[in-house]
Image (tube, rainbow, N blue to C red; front, side, top):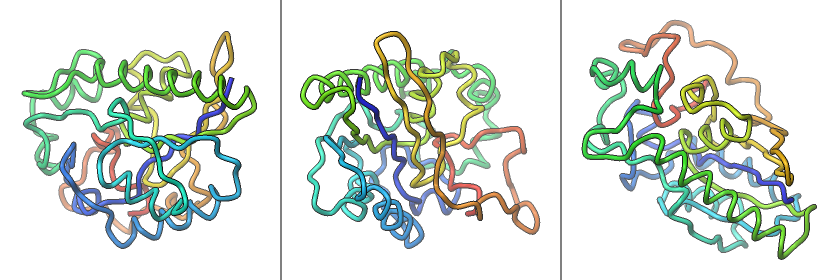
Length: 230
């Protein structure tokens, strides 16, 4: 079956400020636009048979910069998790909520207030990817490459499914802005080919000191965060 490249959108103004954008129409910041252009230089070398995107503007902007000659298909199944009342709030504030430890340790049980269950997000995102993978395979053959642009938690959930991990383990994964993760599906099982590939090691350099109000080191940034080098 075909191979999918999962592209996370570039950094946004919300990522940079430490907020949880959710489904708000936040746009790429200057760093994010540069990230999109750089990843595009790599993607344009590939014979992509299809390009699919979340409907949110940050994903569409990423593709406009990365692949300006391609008009992507839009799939609601790839939209960001519905964080409900958490949407638009600072992560450092959300980390004080009683629900935060559950999001970190038992996300399969989480239903965001007036929002979506993380298990439902995972199920619809995986279903969308598998649908498109089967479609691309039928139209272009098992050696086809295709791309889906989505969001940090969504991509982590898709990767966790491909690895056979329970959703409660997906916070162990990282999907930085403008990173590419690659999954090759087969009739019996998927193979994770690459994870969080940015071809940039600078994000591994720690900042001089923790930012004020930074999350505990063991916690994952809900929504995916701004990346290690931000």
